[in-house]
Structure formats: structure tokens, C-alpha cells
Amino acid sequence: DAGVIQSPRHEVTEMGQEVTLRCKPISGHDYLFWYRQTMMRGLELLIYFNNNVPIDDSGMPEDRFSAKMPNASFSTLKIQPSEPRDSAVYFCASSPQGPFNEKLFFGSGTQLSVL
Amino acid sequence: AQSVTQLGSHVSVSEGALVLLRCNYSSSVPPYLFWYVQYPNQGLQLLLKYTSAATLVKGINGFEAEFKKSETSFHLTKPSAHMSDAAEYFCAVSVKYRNFGNEKLTFGTGTRLTIIP
Image (cartoon, rainbow over all chains, first blue to last red; front, top):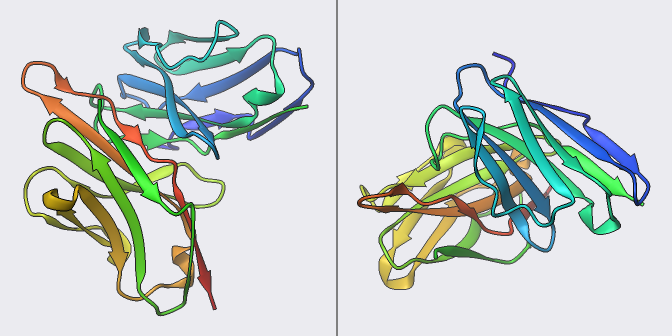
């Protein structure tokens, strides 16, 4: 298996633009997580899905953030409109167990820079 | 709610020297504790975990951590640092409630380890 695949690896955009981050989890994993990593706050859980259904989105910072999982092999995290303070590394992770255990498989992340 | 505090956002050690990365936790119930490592441009990988069995836990790459309830600590150590150990290390905590399974994994803010040749 290729592991969790995220795209793009880097995204540079201007304030106000829409940003879409993509994730392909490991096949057979029922849980998918979106994390945001910043120097100040470390790694924060934004939202997670179980069998494509959003279970807990309490970590989503604002209504500008939304996430979808239309099928078992694809998820998106969208920011509209983007702001400079959204600059961070966004990680997607999947797990065969859940909801919260150490068997998380992380993607390589998307480095987002909002100018 | 549970939390972890990592003391020192940056730690530098010489190659061959002892590595000590500090983590203190806060939890109202017995916790599960983890250390993850993140190499440049990669996602996190599990290094080791404590789940209420042996208090001294051995992980990959020669790392180990000791759970000390009296000190609410779970420090990560390695006797001799190698250049390949340069990475960011995250401590994390999870708790298990009898009727509700595990609470969510809460990460610390990370410690960047630099190895000096």
C-alpha cells in the first residue's frame, strides 16, 4: 500500500482565495482524521470521519473550514476564504481502528502558506 | 480533559550523547501515553507507547520512555544520539473511560531535536 496520500505537498495562495486540500486514506481504514500543525499550538485535531461520516468536527476553527468525505477513498478539507493565520501544515491520517488509538498512519502533509 | 506538556521546543545534543526529551501529562484517569517522531517532510510515526503494562517502554531506534506516575512524566531517552535521530518528537496522551472507549489523542506542541556532529 502506498500509505496515506495528500495533495498538494505545498500550496501558496493569497488571502481570500479558496483552498482545497486532498487526502486518500489507506484502503480498508474506516477512520480518517484531519490535523493542523502550527508552531504555537502543535498538532490539533480538526475533524474525523468514520465510514465517510463526520463524527466530531469540534476542532474546526471557523465556518470558513469545511471537510467532506464523499467515498471511502477520498476526503477534502476546504478553506474559504483563506486568511494568513491559516498558514500551517495540514495532515491527513487514517486508522483501521478507532476512534482514537495509536494506530494512526499519517500522510506527508500539505504546507499551506496564505499571503 | 487530558493534556501533555513538552518542555523545550528545541533540544540540541552532540552525536553519541544522551538524548532526553521531556513530557509531563495531566489526566484525571490512568492515561495511555505515546511518543511520535516526525522526520522532515513526513507524517508522524509511532515511536513507542505506554498502556498500563510495564512502566519502562522500549520503542524503535533505541528509544525508550519511563512512565512515572508520581511525577506525571513520560520522558523519552536514548543513550547515544545518532545523526539520523534529528527530527521532531511529539508526546501524546489518550485516556480510556470504561463505558466510552478511548478519548481522543491529544498531542503536545513538539520538540525539535538537533544532533551536533
